[in-house]
Length: 187
Image 1 (cartoon, one colour):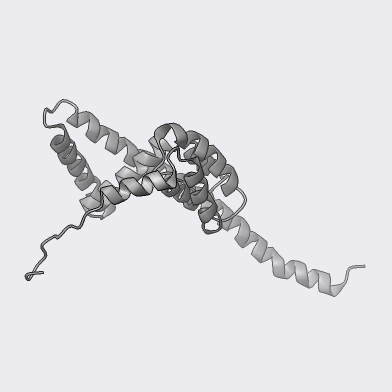
Image 2 (cartoon, rainbow, N blue to C red):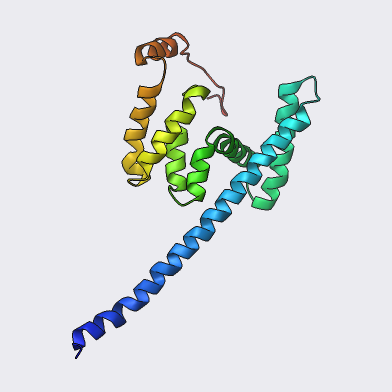
């Protein structure tokens, strides 16, 4: 004999279980779409670099090629070319400098938020330190949400940096500057 309370609980929670399942499926679809878009944007950046490779004015040619590609993509995405350029740069950084994070995100081990935390924290690390940093960071990200692991990942990056904090601070202080940029209306 079943109790009436148990039947009521099942009936009440069945719709919630369906919603949770659908949410999980939608999240997988969104993640897959974000990863594909990221890879496409990274390819667009590589194409701009390839197109500029033949030019003697390499920096200017690269900027122009990137801007032209970003303008084309911006039309499709309904974004400014500068916004698309920023997204292309971010995409290349993730795809080229943090491939393990991309794979972990694709596998559902971590989220895009975790990837962003890892990339931001590892931005000042030398290239040869990034892979070991990334491996430890991914493991730590598995345990909690991006905001809760952010400080831990930032400390990890500082600890793994080959130069001491004092050396980095002295270098930053030696290169600091004040810039005045003319604005509109005499500002």
